[in-house]
Image 1 (cartoon, rainbow, N blue to C red):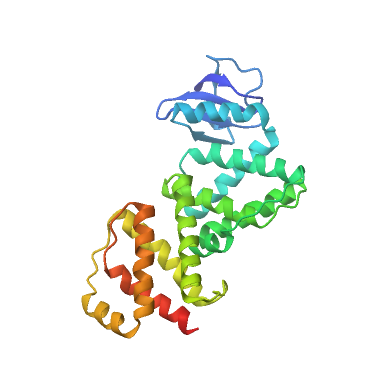
Image 2 (cartoon, helix red, strand yellow; image 1 turned 45 degrees about the horizontal axis):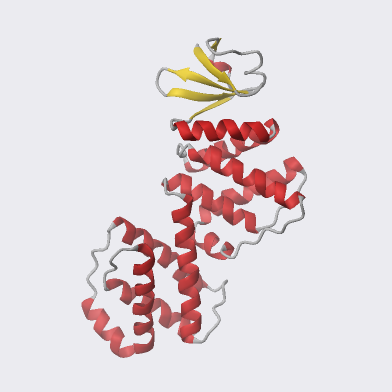
Length: 276
């Protein structure tokens, strides 16, 4: 038996838990008539999750003031689907962030606003597993609430999922996506070409850039490519010089030193694109 701290609505309440301090319990009629201090059987809840942070708790309570209970139920099912797919307990913030994001996305769509996502392709290439689950969630949302949602929204949901999986802020995840888009623009401008977003070499480039950013952030660069660097500098001077231009942009954005070895990998990717 758990002790009720607050009933948020008829189906959602906050209770004291011996292991997690406070938990959010969800179940049909679970919160009806419940007052602080009442006992509730934990197993009677269909779902429960932990909101450890006081700020997160307050934001979730505020969400329930304007979000319909059926939508809250859908979102909890969606988050459970993500956790089952990745076999992980997601960061608690997703209960607030993704619910809030999709609620307002639907509101904007109903008001006639168009949702555009300039980083949709880059997001799909960088986070294919998250993108697949996001696609399923959007399709389920369309069926449940009889609404047509623009494809760009899949990318935004995928970023929320990746943020929760990696426990990195959404702002940081978005920064990396924008950085890659900027790097691609510089490549196209410098080499005077338009990259086919469906081409395998573009896929390789974007995935490499994402992996490079993660390695740089974690300080996992130990590569020594001095011999290959000299060869590439002589063989492909245009692509080699462009690789250093890209590295400077990355350094300014990430505020991290980037080893010279990255110039080797970038030069090889750039040469493949230039050749095409």
